[in-house]
Length: 448
Image 1 (tube, rainbow, N blue to C red):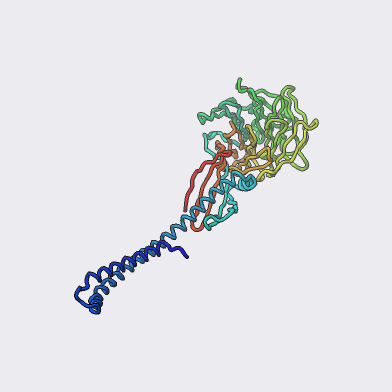
Image 2 (image 1 turned 135 degrees about the vertical axis):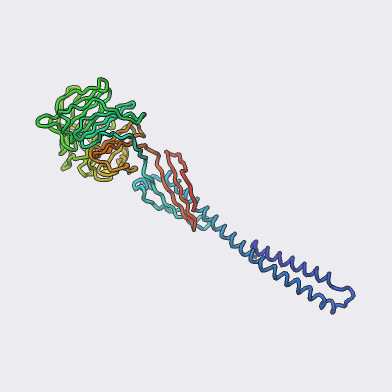
């Protein structure tokens, strides 16, 4: 036997009560002395009146019951759809936390939705779920270097504490120091102008203690190489580089007494020994590769130096300092795009190297352990020649924009954020979550 619905029960109850009222009304209006045949005739007017009243009341009642039934049905359908859509959001969070393959696919293309299949229907409804990675991190505009501006040969280095040093390049002998706490710049002793006026290339590196090293093209037979002491606020000349450096030159400290340098404009790679104040040739770059504008070096500890080669290539290499007498270059995963003037690398600790693309707003992160790249939040404006990057801790970096600009920015690393969309029937839910390890935070959860 089919079970009666609530609406059917209400209608039958109303009809039953109406019949009872009609029978009561007939009994009250029947004269007691009339015979049976006469009683029916006298009851007819009352019955007709009751039926007329009932028909008047029944129509709006049935309309009410019908509307109530449709509303209840629509509400039930909406509730089922919302329940299924909520389940889709929960499933999206679970996938991001527990499926590294799908999460890697989402991370590889920030801003591009990736559809995932919900395993089964919920209340007869199967939600459609998409996952979208947000570009990682956030940029902030800080005190510009004005009236000075950074151009080719510009460089940025963190030396500890609240000290970030900057060369302006572009033929300027200006040397500045930035304080992150006060967000302010001060000019310090200038670069020896006799050499630095031709600074269309160059770099700077911090070698620990109180020493910063820098080189620049110079002119004629002069290939100047200098050390700056943060203690005495003085520049000290060192032995010249073996040849004049060219655009694409890069310099890095690799621990102990070791500095390494790309000459730029070709494949030449040098080693400088701080203790003996001497240069030597190391293994040239591989094959037909060449260091051009935007080339950069970074040391992450251990045996390896990492290198972007610039020159509108996306080549990325590492140099093994311990392999043989001259070392060995090894190819790694290509950078996400071509690197140009303003390309740079920065490392503080852990598993990540950060990179400015140069010639664009591109900003990336390289994961050392997996040999993979991730696209981060774009820089506020296009980075040009002389742009450079330095990290002061594992979550905070600073950047010169370069390109003849005084712009200076701060970058803050944030936990990964993802947008999840789940649609079930006419219900669509949008959520943004933040994942920090296994911990999750809901940024927002909106129902449409």
